[in-house]
Image (cartoon, rainbow, N blue to C red):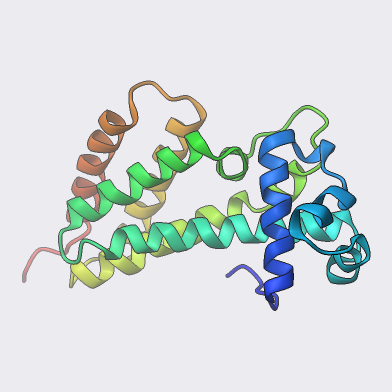
Length: 198
């Protein structure tokens, strides 16, 4: 799991402000004074909470990962025992989020380049977030596919996650079409993990 750190309304508001400024201008253009102003706190308060711009980047990256993985779990669980609907919802959410959120896309695709100094904080989480996303799929499928072979289940989850990421990096078709096709494939992979009755 991603290491959790204590949050307070002040910390949350500062991270919210930093995120908004990052999406609008890129991390290179974010200044601690601007973050403080957007959050309605003093510049010293920002430094007191995070120590440095690097500390703020760390908190922002952690927030993006935690939110993303939490949303994937919620999308899966919202459909109960309907495995295909859950798979479609989680895949469509991931594809849509990556298309709309440059921070999440950087995490999932391990995008590097340019001078954006925030990227190392995001891309170092790529393996962690993919592992957590696979774990969410394994937990969810395990609940709805009793008797499934655990190794096959892990393979199905890992393969599904890797395929979704490949479509984030190089999208070929509209999100709905991609999500439909990948959900069908995920159902096939997860169904194959169920042991035949003896």
